[in-house]
Structure formats: C-alpha cells, structure tokens
Length: 60
Image (cartoon, rainbow, N blue to C red; front, top):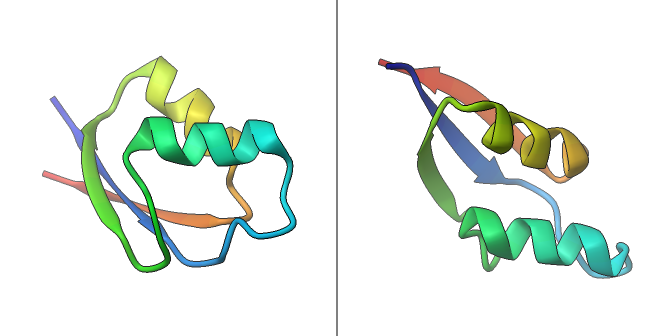
C-alpha cells in the first residue's frame, strides 16, 4: 500500500480552529514536522483541508 509523507511548511497561526485540529490529528505540531501516513481516503481528506499549510509526497 502506498504511503504519504506530509510536511508542515507554513505556520497555523491565524488559521481556523478546524485547520489547527486537523494538523494535530495528522500528528503535526510545528513547522517542518514530517509524518508518514498510509494513503487512505480519510488521510487524503485531512490533507485536502490543510493543503495550504502542508506539502505531500508519495513514498513507496
């Protein structure tokens, strides 16, 4: 199964509470944090919500 490498590249300061909660759910706490998650629809949806704060790469 494919995996996604999610990196927080922008600060959440000034963003909506929903976006902050989504970052926390992904496991991102501060800028330049990196997490690797399974490529599932739930994760894709969370990444889509905060797409302006993160970058995503596919990892094998």
